[in-house]
Amino acid sequence: MGFYWHVRRNARRLSRLMLAMLPLMVLLVGSCKTSEVTNNFTRKNDVTQLRAALFPDRVAATGDYRPAGGYIARAQDFVQSNPAALTKLTEQEIGFLFGKPSMERRDADARIWQYKTPSCVMDVFFYGGDQSPVSYIDYRIKADLEQGAAPRTEPLGTRNQSKCLRKIVGGDFDSYRG
Image (cartoon, rainbow, N blue to C red; front, side, top):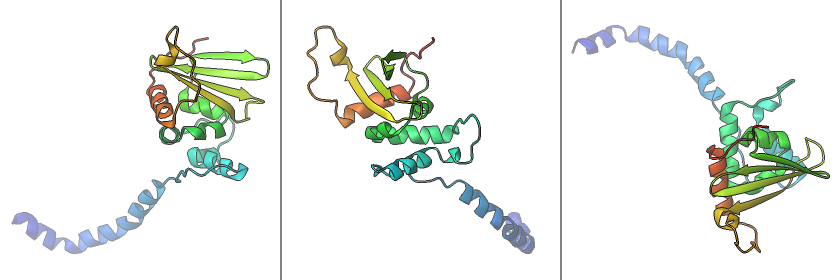
């Protein structure tokens, strides 16, 4: 009962305090809003929009850029559910998402990054400069890696690609130390 009388006695002060705090609360809520990432990115302009949606702080960045952790986590979630989106990203952006690869290899004009977990392997192929997009991605699951296994005739499905990406994002691989 004492609390009720205290609130009633100070109601005018509390209402003024709430009115003064309202603009601050609106600013805080507005600053938490991030851009949405959609699935339809096929044209060149759409690829630019995908990159801007995944790493929105890059627009204002100067010099060495490193995205905020929240943007990296959101981009990882997006590519796990849409593995085909990886082919729109550059070498630098793949590095942001997955870190250093388990192995790096150069074959003529190609650069190949391999991310290997106990249950799957992902090879990412790059042709061209550092800012050119991923050319091809190859996934292999544990059954494909066993000695004497028959070669796969069809690419891995989206569901298995997503599972492999979840393992890689979860840090279930040995990073390259060289």
